[in-house]
Every structure is written in structure tokens, then in C-alpha cells.
Image 1 (cartoon, helix red, strand yellow):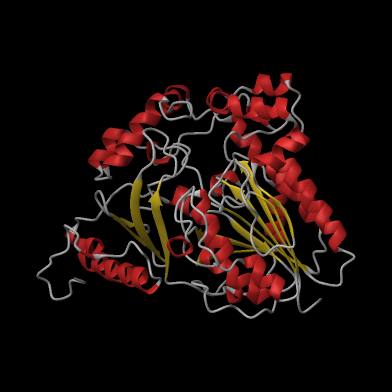
Image 2 (spheres, rainbow, N blue to C red; image 1 turned 120 degrees about the horizontal axis):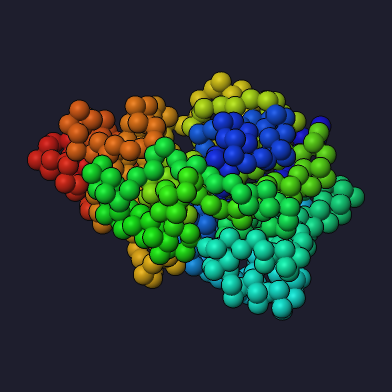
Length: 486
């Protein structure tokens, strides 16, 4: 084995643990990700830095929290000069390539600029995809996207005879495979980032993938809450508003009320797309030399799928959108193990550098969890920091600044500070489904205040530009108390 193994990072979009079959999930079938887990390590307590596409990817590929990279919500670019993972591996002598969704240039569907630091790029913008699939299919893809997803129009996918070559994932895989084949003749190790847009809507996949779920409904989660129950449980008003919109289908996807009345959520395109992207990433796994390659697979954020009466992602930082799959395999990693050690995606950058025997740069906010990858019984973090800053493009009434900071701890506590609405505190040991907001429960006051102090310290330490006195002055914290952080 080389001292500098090849590195392959695969990122999907909008996939939580219910969207994989490794572990406890049993609704979908993801045999390739399961096989990777059998050969490596599954990190069950892996948290994103933000439950939104662009800022989450900023955390992964810069090693810095989104608030310090520039891309703190969708539609924003990285600050000029922010180092990327590609630049670090390139400077260490690696051949580097970036394939697929970038989303950190301020332009999601246009002619955005490429990811900095990569010698070879097939980056995510409309021009590439439009050129590959042709204008007619492109016009259909864009013009009917929302209606098609909402109505789960499998028949039209059949009528148009959609193939893998018509999808983002198919094109992304083909470019990745071409790079791997060409790099096999290079003396340098390679770093390859493969970034799928799937299973994010429009969740396009060819038959037979979507057909498998034509007659199936995903059971409503046990932590489903109506808008009225959210209010009774002390949840922020915005959650209640969105749950009411999802209840009627007035928020892009088919209604939650339909799921209540008919025994589950009807989402055949989404679940079929999960199986499709698993099939595509399997092609990538098969193409690499497993004795010389570290492979890491994760997602930029999860998907609510009815949990708390919500759908999609954004603004509420429950585990359904913040705790996402991370599976890694490689020549120096433990095989066939799962770990409950708390890790953050901010740690992935330094971990991959560590596994490649490359010096970890000082600018990284995270730290390597190689010790856990080689020995899953070990611990890593005491807490993970998660942020939400804005919608980018909201589903109901336009753009919106909505700042939230969350601290989740290895011993099972979660505090969310919401600058505009009520805060939340959950005891994940007694309430793993996050149903009961304990923010005003005096039995939890000491623990709440400890988490509050720690969260404020992390905001200051990581130079959070939104840090200020408003985060310290909370209604439940006595300003006359000498321990008050003000």
C-alpha cells in the first residue's frame, strides 16, 4: 500500500439514514453503500455543518464553518482566496478532479465558475448538463420539474424513455469513471470528488428504479406532529407555519394530509432515485483499487419526510436533516464496524488529509477522526456545531434570513438558539425523537446554561460574523446571574 492512497469523496444530496439500508432502515435498498459499510466504518453520529446545500458543501470542501467561508446560505460564493480541499491535495502532489454539483459559486443552474484547486473539472452548471442531454429534454426537465415531482409522474418518465444518460447522476458517473481510468496510468495518487445532485428533487431516475415504489408508501414517522402539536410542544412558530403549508400541499411537495389519510408518504421518484444513485456510485466503487484507495460517502443534508410534520430541509435543525450518513473504507480503516462516536463533517477535510499522510493545514476548524476510523470504540468530539442562516430561495414567500445555531453533544443534549423565535432544548437520551422542547424546564436549567456558554464560545472562537449580544440575552437566562455570558 502506498503512503499516499488515492482519495475518493462521494456526496449525495438530501439523504438521511432512512435513505440507506445499512443500519436499521428497511424501506430502501442500497446494496453498494451497504457493501462499502461492510468493508469499512459506518459513522452513525455524523452531523452536517448546515442543513442546506451550499453551506454544507462549503464546510466539507473548505474545512471551515460556512459562516467563515462566505457561502453561509444558498446563492452565495466562497470568499476570494478561501482554500479548498482540492488545492491542498494538489499542492501535496495529488492529481485532482472535481465532478458534479459545486453550488459554491453563487449560481446553481447557470454558467457558474468551477471549483478552485482542481486540475480537471466537470462542475455542476446548466451549460454542461444541457449540452449533454440536448435542448428538448432540458426544456422538459426545467419547465415541469415542480409539477412532476409533486404529482410523481412516473408515466411521463416512461413516455420519454428516460435513461441513465439523461440524468445528472449518469453523466457525473461517466466523467468520474473516465478520470479514474486515465489516472491509472499516472504515477501520482489522485483525489476525486464525485458530487451527485440526486436524490434531491426533481429526483429523476430511469425505470425500473422509480417503478419499484409506484405502489408503496413510506410510513409516517413516529415523531410526526401536526401544527397544533408543534405549538403544544413549544416549537418555533415558523415550524408550525411550514407544517401547515405541507399539510395542504401548498409547499412544493404532495401534501402531508394525503399521507395521513392514505397510510404514508407517496414519494416513488425520491426513493427510486436513492436506489438509482446507489447503483451509480457502485460503478465508481468497482472502478477503484480498494487496496490503494480511501472512499468516503456522505450527504450534504437529510430530508424530513414527514418528521415533525415537515418535508424537505431548512430552518429546523432536527436530526432528520442534520444527522446524515457517513461511510468510509480504506486500507488502514477498520472493516465491518459501526461507531457511535460523535463526528462532524467539518472533520472530514482534516481526516482525509491525515489518511493521505499529508499535513493538516492550520485553517481547518475541525480535527481528524482517524483514531475512530481505525478503532471505532474510541471517542472523538464532545460536541458538534450546526448553523442555519437563511433560506436562499424559500418555498413559500421568498428569501428570508433565519439565523439558528445548534450544539449537539456526545452525551445526548441538543440546544438550538433561534435569533428570531423561541429556542429549543432536547434530551436525546430520554427524547430521541425531539418531541419535547425543554428550554423552559428548570430541571434542565444548569445543563442548558452550560450548553449556552459553550455555544457562544464556539461562535466567538470560529469568528462567526453573526455573533453578538443578542445570542447571549435569552429570555430564559437571568441577566442578573453572575454566570450570565453578557
